[in-house]
Image (cartoon, rainbow, N blue to C red; front, side, top):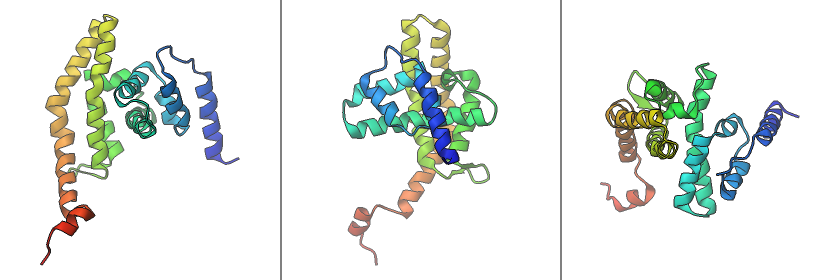
Length: 199
């Protein structure tokens, strides 16, 4: 058995030992079972991340392509947590909406998306933009905290939303959007190329 196979088996065994959350739907269980069984799959087995996925399920319905999309969204946030695990600065899911860890989230996003500080470009600008969209879903955490009357979490989530409005655009999305638009202009879709008359 290869090293990668052994690792996948270890992750499967670890996932099997985790208790099933009461609020997790049958569809979510199917999404988790079909997901690549790696460290990221293990990382997203927590209340906030599972509720994040359930939020998309309630909007998208029961469709196979929606399930792939939901798994992708969950793994995108899971990569941020995985990055901090590698750098020995553990990040819980709540830290994604913790204003005290916002700079760490910025750092993780840049690392995951291949940011080059010399020219302010990303290797994967689309991933940086998707991460921002995902983090804006922190109202899920806010809603859950309100149900539990967690005033501290409510305050943190609201502050994080303000930081996303003020800081994220300047440090992440402005660079990623400019780069994406430039790439689309230089390499337009084939259908668009066929419509544009070239001399």
